[in-house]
Image (cartoon, rainbow, N blue to C red; front, side, top):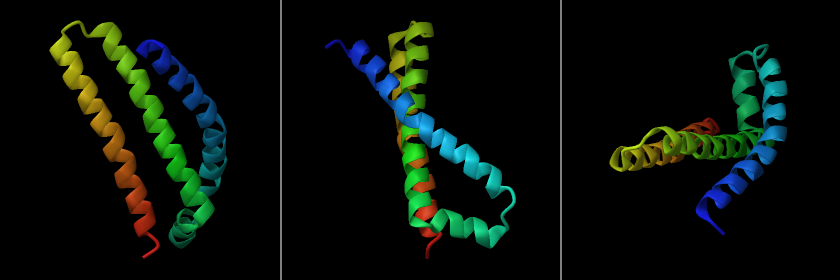
Length: 109
């Protein structure tokens, strides 16, 4: 299977997984605005919420990196710049969810 076919399939699968997680997040985001600080901490420290939110972040950044990578492929013609941009994007897509997830799990302490 060609690499662009794999990327396309990963994009489709991740978007299918992302849809119910996005609906869950939007529904809870509306209720989060009504929470005070302690209720917000309680929401994110609940095992189900932290697991779903962590999964949402990982899938969202995975989808973001695939999508932006395709934009780089289409619009950046210099191979060196394209490779550097893709590597920085993938590093960003790994570090940002990791920092956020670690921060959420440190709320329990």
